[in-house]
Amino acid sequence: MAASQRLLVMPDDGAEAVVALIEQAQSQLLMKQFKLQSEAVEQALFRAQQRGVQIRVMLNPHTSGGDRWNDEAYALLQGWGVKVAWTSERFPVTHEKSMVIDGHAALIATFNLSDKYFTETRDYGVISQDPRVIEQVVAGFEADWERRAFDPRLDVGLVWSDVHSRGQMARVIDSAQESLGIQHPKFVDAVILERLVAAKQRGVKVRVLCGGKHGLSDWDVYDTFSSLRLLEHAGVKIRRQKQLKLHAKLILVDEQAAMTGSMNIDRSAFDLRRELGIEVDAPDVIARLSETFNADWEDAKRYSAPDPLDPAYHEEGELPPDPHFVHD
Image 1 (cartoon, rainbow, N blue to C red):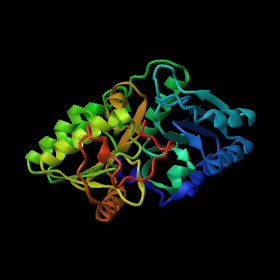
Image 2: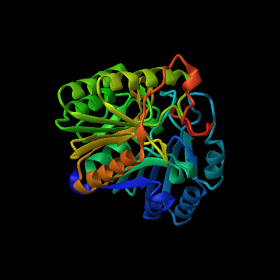
Image 3: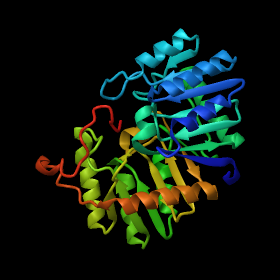
């Protein structure tokens, strides 16, 4: 697996890295996205369509709060003759961010294809050339395109929701022997919370980079703040991401392996939504993930989550509210 992975880091690599991937397509391009709001990406899809690439795109129709961010992109692609469909009704939300190029490369990302996520947020994307991974991403696309059940293999390094992603994430955390670097905006799952506390108790150095309140819904503040407070009580070091908005979902294990992808640490992400993540072991990818995490950690300051029942302190030190930056 290791030799067939490479990493994209946002905003360092920018929209240009995604456009370059699309420009490589010669015969087929499959895309499944939570949000498409980038003119650069849309124009790259148009150029691919013009040179004869067979394109199919699935876009999530609305967020859990009802916002319809993809209507404009849907109409645009449809007007160009691109085959475009809404994601499967089997899931209340499809949060997956994936793309397959010519059956030779698959992108599994934390970032949306939107200018905000190319310029303002910390995000990651893994490009895999492992045939087993690509085959499974394609199979998941076809199942959702055809509105049928999908029973993925769980032995190729992919992490699917709503299948067994909670169990896979727990296994990754349990494998840590020396260190865990957690870069996640939401903490809304007791199973994963207990695994992180248990790791600390068995002597693992656990560091958590969170995003504070920024981007959290009112109902997620209660669980996330309480979880962060419990982690702090257990001795876990917690800092709040500075400079960039935190949208990444990363678990870094012993600086030798990692898990990243679309799913937040969130019950809905594990049990209800279509999500996709990937386990990573390529040395170059791990090295860059470690470098980025450690740089973000050094830029950040210690964070003690306020009492979730005392909103007077919830905005202290937070970035200005952004209605278009929500952790779904």
